[in-house]
Amino acid sequence: MTGYAAPVRDIRFLLCDLLDVSQQLPGADLSSDIIDPILEAAATFSREVISPLNRSGDEAGCSMPAPGEVRTPAGFREAYQQYCEAGWTSMGCATEDGGQDMPFVLHGLVAEIFSGANMAWTSYPGMSNAAYICLAANGDAQQRKLYLPRIASGQWAGTMCLTEPHAGTDLGLLRTRAVPNMNGSFDLTGTKIFISGGEQDLTENIVHLVLARLPDAPSGTKGISLFVVPKFLHDDDGHLLERNPVTCGSIEHKMGIRANSTCTMNFDGARGWLVGEAGKGLAAMFVMMNHARLGVGISALGQMQAAYQKALAYAEERRQGRAGAGGLGAGPDAIIRHADVRRMLLVQKAYVEGSRALIAWASLQHDLAHRGDAEAGERLALVTPIVKAFVSDCAVECTSLAIQVFGGHGFIRETGVEQHLRDARIIPLYEGANGIQAMDLLGRKVLMDGGERLRLLARDIAGFIEQESGSEQLRPLLSELGSAAKTLDMVTRQIAKSAASDPDLVGSVAVPYLRLCGHVCLAWMWARMAAVGHAKAGSEDPVYADKIATARFYFACLLPEVRSLAVQIEAGSAPVIAVALSHSNH
Image (cartoon, rainbow, N blue to C red; front, side, top):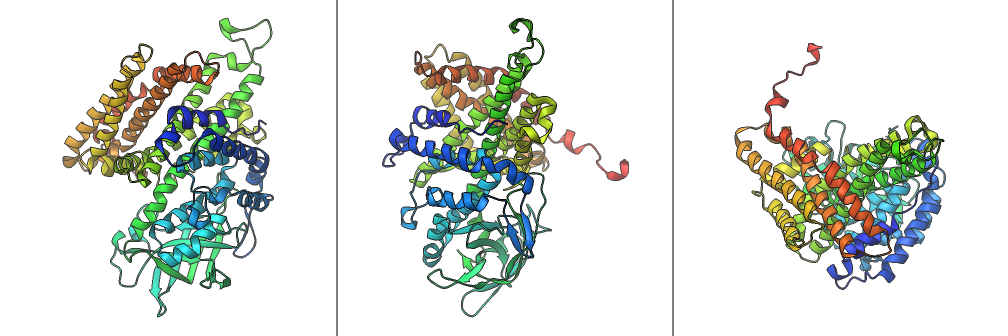
């Protein structure tokens, strides 16, 4: 079984060659002298500490040795302690909280390395970082002072408690109640399900961020407030007191990420404190959710990368049959010489490296937005559902292709590749299922603002095409990129024209629309990477020629899907709505 190797060279290419982050983010020390040791340290930690726990953690899963007590697999706690001691938990946190204040464009790519090595383990600190982001944006001075340094150090963890047994996507249905006390606190009662890291043995305390209703709150989402509910109560200096009545009722036995505890959490009059304003909890929580959506896109990328590595190594070693005109000698050839195997590997490679470029660019927009760049914030809002949904769909497709490269050997656990598909399969479901992401993109991010955000992206792409118009080598790619962008504009106009009179249209075409947007974004990234490759013509570093060749594959074999997606969208809602679907008919 091939061990995980961090894609350090490709990350360096993105940070230094494609995005030139040291120039884009002046004042942030992102020179190679800073970036290189961080990436190498992350690669070492992932390879030596958490990757060896990936299979054993999956096989053991989490357990409940006593009611309400969750035990993570062997080695997880020790690895977490090493992670904290090395300062990884504080990488993206503010210096006033004891953090390193590293830009998200670097922090996110380091997170990919850890997720590729062990997604279930990485999900614990990943969720805590999302809780840190939420409290930093919405907490009052006392809450920030109390919670942020302890989450940044890894001493305390954080969770996100939204879903209830009867209320998933439709959070307006939630029933958890928060009753005010005389001292300004609240007692929360209700049940939350599917809570990642809701109980674990890694940290001394867990800070739950919980959506609930006040007694006089109106129905629907406008009546939801956000509360911070610690596992252990504490004094004003953070010293732990008695156990709060919030407990794990059960852990889910899951298809994948089995080593990450997914809990049913029972709040039985648990003491909590309001975060932000009453009735505005959903807006506060969306700060965390949008950050988490970028994070799970990064997790999807990690699974694609890890599965691709295994498939590539296996294809180089496994010998079967003759590879046509490329066959060597009389004996069987390595299957990497077979054209169809090469096709499957190249699909994975093109989606992996294209997705990594898109995520790095989106992460840079995150950093620029935090520096006051309003247009960067609009770009980020547009591409966040694309990063979450398109990349996670690609992860399911690519990890399945990795198994296909192995043939029957991929279906058994011994090779380790099937775990990546099982782990990746959750990502299209959580932090807002991909169908919801698609409707958010089309309904809210495109139609609601009259297409302004989409036009901003279109101007970016048109500007790149104009900038590179003199390049003879890039001309075929630029032509196809321009055509794909025009197709996106055409179907967007068509939807905008028809949506008002067809209430089923957005729901019917949103998923192919998001995928079309994803292809346009990846085509732009691949054309940009090819431009860098041509600019470095003659370099002895093979990465530049490799980018050009892979870009050509993407444009020739994957981007043409935009034409079939456009046909699906043009068909409108009628094919979806016309068929009578009823269990009684079967």
